[in-house]
Length: 137
Image 1 (tube, rainbow, N blue to C red):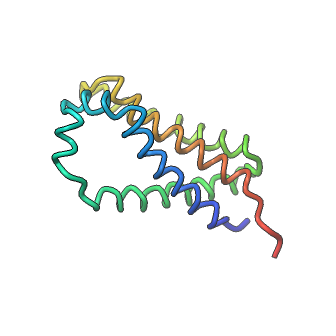
Image 2: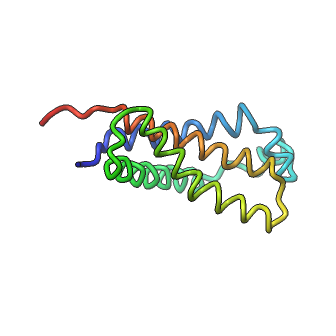
């Protein structure tokens, strides 16, 4: 099966936009506090462009690899795509990052905010990839 590049790009962009909602609207104040800063301090630090570019490129790579996995496992529905995103997150992202946070002594709430974002994002991308039907050539 070929990769649906349109679904990959849309999924990556939506994951990127979810980051703004997640870190600004939903959890911004709590996230800043857990990072040992205030929202005002973070605003004063400015908004360098590089982290946003890196985030978008990484989201594209993640969406592409998730598309490969959906193809390999036959995840051709929204539910199966979402399940693929969830299982990949649980098996690789959640486990490795929680282990690191425990040894670093960082708060569980900070892990939950940071990697809850990637969980929701990977499920979102998987849902899009599974649901998006390509037109026949």
